[in-house]
Length: 379
Image 1 (tube, rainbow, N blue to C red):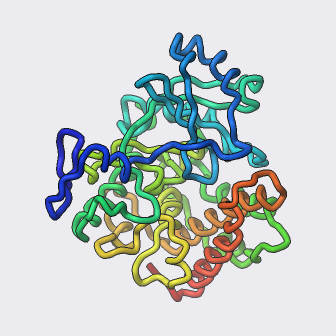
Image 2 (cartoon, rainbow, N blue to C red; image 1 turned 90 degrees about the horizontal axis):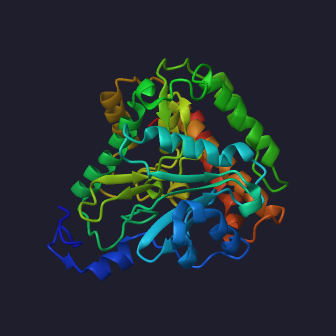
């Protein structure tokens, strides 16, 4: 099991890592700012002086390397650190990058859900950075991306425990009392499933490029196989995956923070589960799908989608009666997001070369959807 105490980590073989080793290998580090994504530091300092006081004089900015959507920067002054979030440059999808929504959700969850960063300041004055942005607290910890960090040296049992804990926190979010959080009038839960399908289909059409795969069959299938509303309205994250979650360095089994709330709302929790399962590959999935995984979910010990659905039903009391629909929706939605990202690259709105491969990933997601729709993959 993971060890604890004094900023160190003990793996299953008893290896004790020093603080420096833990920091170098496990902590998600900010680095140089990508070309074309620089911030006007003088303008930012002037704006934040009433918020941070004299600390702004020594304010430094770095950029976190991960993510394809909203941009995330580390602000530091001496020993103090904050995180700044802003929309991507060149985005044409305003609703997907709503900083005020993200800030409002985080503010509402304070005191009722312990995993959200603390919101510090919201700015809608575009004279500062040319867009809305907000400041929140920085949470230091372990962020797991495509591979498990070698320093963890987890056994299959530990992987299984950690990933079940990861999904249990999603179930906790779906169990937040909307009235207590002051979110009972936030969003439009009635008709949520239909609006989501219609909305993502429209976004697909708006983001198509000449080299894009045809997704007409998937869009029609989603309309034809849409289930009734679950009847449950919950706070939903809408992009819940391991690289949006922070695990404790002292106990990597424990989730201590959840990031990237820009698409959060109140809606059907089964759609949120489907969004996460859209990321989830498992060991018996086709190689072409596993090749494009974003989480280390196809390793020994990781729970299968069927096991995740069973545990979700147990924790939330919400039955999942049409798994194929939610899974295909999750895949299609990811394909749309990837195509929106690729659209920006295709039209020269960003120079980030990571975006060039998104058109291929969209093709893979469509191929997987077709296998599910044909009944070749059932769980």
